[in-house]
Image (cartoon, rainbow, N blue to C red; front, side, top):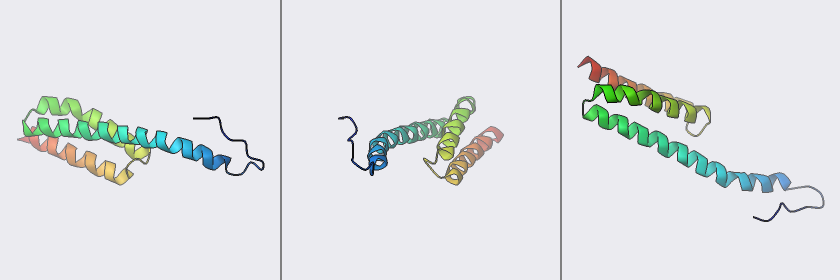
Length: 97
């Protein structure tokens, strides 16, 4: 990308910077979402296989990833909390059984 354009009045420089930042943020957010969803799938697979030890090992990683996404507004914080709660409840049901 060429160096930032020098504008006579200084207008629009913030818009140019925002346009440069947006794709970087988009890819970072997409990577975070993919990681969190993959971890959740691993956790659900462990629950389906009734492997409580593996599920309890993966749960903190899943909680961390979803909490981070909620804090950074990649997903809504309530949606992240809801996802964590549902996965935690599934593990507790598995442990109780």
